[in-house]
Amino acid sequence: RVSGQWGTYVSDSRKPSICRLVFEFLPWSTGGLVVHTIELAHAISPYCSAQYFLVPDDGSDTQQLDAGFEFRVTRVPYLRFSRLQRFKERCCRWLPLRPLVVMSFGLSAAPKIIALAREGKIDIIHAHGITNSIAAVLAGRLVRKPVVLMLHGSLEAYSKESGAWERLVATLFKPDHVLVLDDGE
Image (cartoon, rainbow, N blue to C red; front, side, top):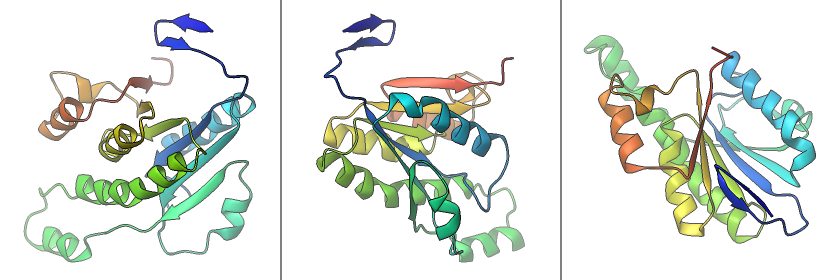
């Protein structure tokens, strides 16, 4: 039994398993968030019984790439809103489509999270990014699993300076814990 500021964890002599919901992932997304996510997976691997990554399916052949990870990667199809993207480019560049695309991915991944939880394969749901917390929190409440949200770079979603979308999501879809990775600033 371990107690601390994050609550009490009672070990049942087995390591917990984690399901990660990650929109920015290889091969089409490279950069800090992808690096941080993979490094975290490697660092906590000795403390987990399994790690499942739910990531976007961009249509490319990723079998060889995915087989090289020490965690299980499942590619999830999602709506890309291509017609809406073209409309945005022609008429209204200010239209924020990214939250819709990421939300589409999360909602497509939610049934997979629920299935993993019902099969007893996961203990924790870990969402990367404020928009992914929508699907993670909904799935977590349905299957009674704790949800951890990781924000990469700032607490903007929880500050007075955040945009309306971030404030709305942070208010309506509250995870059990929030971690902020800020590169040591």
